Length: 323
Image (cartoon, rainbow, N blue to C red; front, side, top):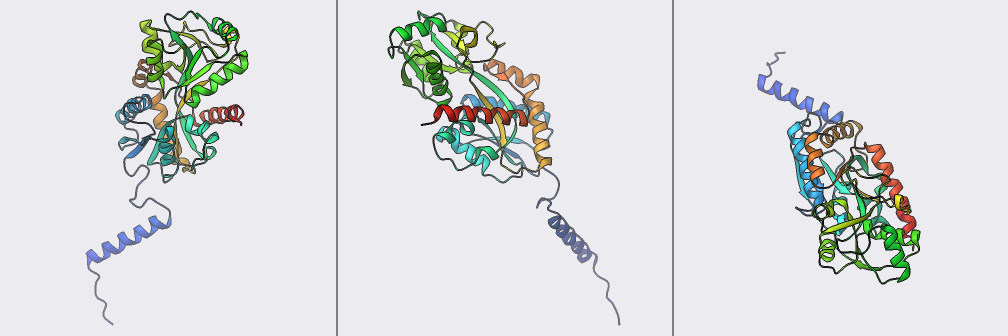
């Protein structure tokens, strides 16, 4: 029996096909290689130009400059639902590491207590904590209130006569907790965010504003607004002259967090790589400088620590938001 030699091109094709079968059988990525096999998307659940968008773009610029992933990282804005739309897009994406998100804590710690969401915040993969932003009570420079004691005394003397601007849950909850701790009642006015609150304060249309340090830092530095208290355990380096609520006899601590998250069940090797890459960028001098300019406190807490902080805040919020 005569055998015919197999053409070299056919033999090579057979080898390639066999190799592809081996990769598929071993669970390798369809395109071959290791993570990432394409550019990574970072979803921001708020519009371009928002505070968290600006923060994320500053961080992503550092990630791309450091180039530890070997692929580009791209920012994608998915706004809506007070952050829940973009958060849903992240947590329901394929758990392959090519879609992550930088999100505020609200959609993970607060919103699930007030409305139905299509994700389980307890199963989220937390890669790290980017920044924290303390909550403050702020008044116009012309306000008669010089500190928390003055505010409490006035509120007790005339319940529900002093207007307090809050709105988002990260503001409404500490405002309510303050009332519980001090036995006071204010007339609450809802605002969409820090910019609207600032406008009302500057126009003398609001007595007290609940807002983040990042949203008030420019007006505080100009002297147009004054902070009565900051809800941190200790004074903040960015604003060392602002006294804490605790120092003024009110045990109120409340901060907003921005965290890097990914879908549940992210493979360990992918999670480790992403955590290392974002951690290096967060702790870089370049990002620290950018965050400081925005009035944000750089955190850099690892994924485990960040997730515990989120869990603890969600538990506290559950008690405060209980009907």
